[in-house]
Amino acid sequence: MSYSLIPKTLSLSSSSPLPFPDKTSPPFLKSSLNSTPNRPTIVPSIKASLSTSQPPILESSKSDLAGQLRVEILSESLPFIQKFRGKTIVVKYGGAAMKSPDLQASVINDLVLLSCVGLRPVFVHGGGPEINLWLGRFGLEPNFLNGLRVTDHSTMEIVTMVLVGKVNKHLVSLINKAGATAVGLSGMDGRLLTARPNPNSAQLGFVGDVARVDPTILRPLIDNNHIPVIASVASDETGQSYNINADTVAGELAASLGAEKLILLTDVAGILENRDDPSSLVKQIDIKGVKKMEGEGKIGGGMIPKVNCCVRSLSQGVRTASIIDGRLPHSLLLEILTDEGAGTMITG
Image (cartoon, rainbow, N blue to C red; front, side, top):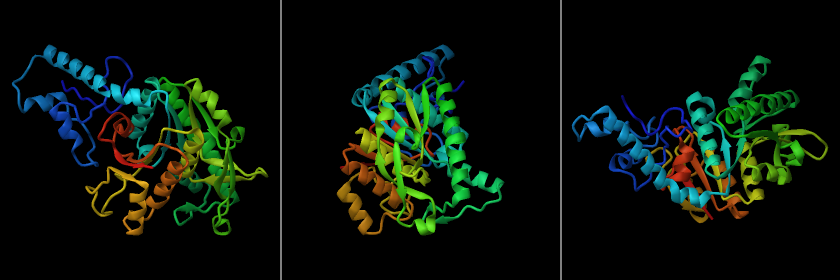
């Protein structure tokens, strides 16, 4: 029998192991955290770890050891739980973590676990692949300009239908099933977000920016330990709907809520010193360092709007912003409950 510290689907039962390794963990946990970011698993099974250095042990001894390791890992996570307990964190969900069922389960269970130990998460999502699927079913071709979806009237109807009516409610259902209480919203609800046309609206159509945030509707939900799940569409003053980049929505919400942390789940390891070298991950950087890297051309492509979103939220009072690897199982827990993290943390 093999015991693993990080199962594919994390259970919140008392008998399940919890993945909170950090730099003070036993040696075999340390070595796993120093591995490359793209490894599919983070921590090897206890059996495999022990077999290289110790003789075979009885099944009952294995069970006792597994239980002891769970207790040690929980104990080591205590300082991180104390640091973030009662604090609001805004998580933008998308990319590979949304497309893979296993990674989706990992993110949802991480979110619920963080809520259970006293953090106050707000979950913001897009849904690009699902939108493309439904556009295809209606015989429409997806069209992008500088990374933004060109959104005519027909496309906007499908975007609203998919994000608000399908993806949002699916995520709410998964969170509720995992043991928390989620409430699905869009930017239209309670005037949470007021949109304005993007400066390139002549080419992009109904693609918008955030003109104003009113978090009044969110505060009682957060105070009552509910998890708001927010689709990134909103209306302008006239009632016209707009498709808004989910990173932008997450950043503006984090600023308006005075969040402790903004986390963007992505399909890359984080900010890289060398964009062609995945091992050149920058673990921590401040705004000045980010601007320097941008000036040197080290940050480009789709990373530019993500970095700018983080910088803007930091300038409005968010304590830290992280761009983390959503392809990594339990990346949320690694980012919040360990010193190692799961990507790049940007500070003010």
